[in-house]
Length: 500
Image: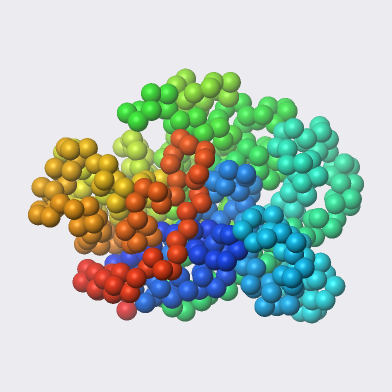
């Protein structure tokens, strides 16, 4: 984290621009985006246009719904992001032996299993030593690999539904299970080794081209995760492993019943007594992956909305203060170069704003939230701050063309008057929103890839409050016409966002 006095010598000392695109949204021939050739091509596109930041969603392994915000681990990488071509290039995978057609997660799983078997039998000693070193260096890996191996044996059931000895981590039982599942555990460790190896290669490639990686860290973790199973003392759970209190946000203008997320809440007293070791480990892993990190739901570091677990909505909860200031002090001292961005959207109290400002953390300015109200709306460009990140929209918003198309009359009129835009077709208005973001005083401007490609609502990444059809969007290189690249180059130079 940085102070305002240090800002001019660090990341936020320069005007920059970036693109929001999750790796799953990359093109590819295997059914979803991954860390393969298209990831490198995307870095080259960013460099060509003058973008210096690639922002993405959390990279962890997901549950069946595919949400990156409910991961099976706060540390592990999603094995479904592993590049198949990378495995082929190293001679560990013969695609002709895979019986499932490309395009499904089962195809990728079969590829990983086949690559692991070849690696065991044929990999050079230097690769096996690198794997051994990796396993020794990652303190979280043992628990994660054992968790995933047991979960597979238990037919995917949540750990709270496992037999009591497994659920409660009986030492004798776990020792025997680890022995019985040794090969599955070794395969899972291999997958994580490959993921992190591939990630470091693409990150190094990006750095050489002046592109930095911008990650996303959900403040809470999924109940059914290796983290909660292995570190129950850090969470407010009963003796069976079920949460006593769960996370969410209270009712507001958008929801009469609030949002009941269901994540177990932290036992902050236990975490604080342990010098926030769990958080230190989490930030350490994030720094292996990213150059800067967005903290999702930052206001949860000041207070969290505690909902009794038996409640079906978020109505009957209460705000409870947490020692986020002590945590931020701890990680600032532990990781002096840590660059954080605070997701400070929604109803933000003076206390939350003070916490963010005391640590000089950039907040977020969303242009889709700017119009239809008064001149004091903090998202309007004339109210932006240097130490902030401006977005046309986020992964939870509609695409900007979709937002423009569905604008209420009062929002459209305010936008037209504010922008001084004389032409009223939707693409012209989209380009005006992009210009507003790039012209903002905010040191970092982020454009979702959909807005660069001028795509409508059918291409949005996520619709909050729904569980179907999310997290699946992908683009195609044919959508990125040369004129679009040239226009982005021109705009980034015009508004001083190309870093020399």
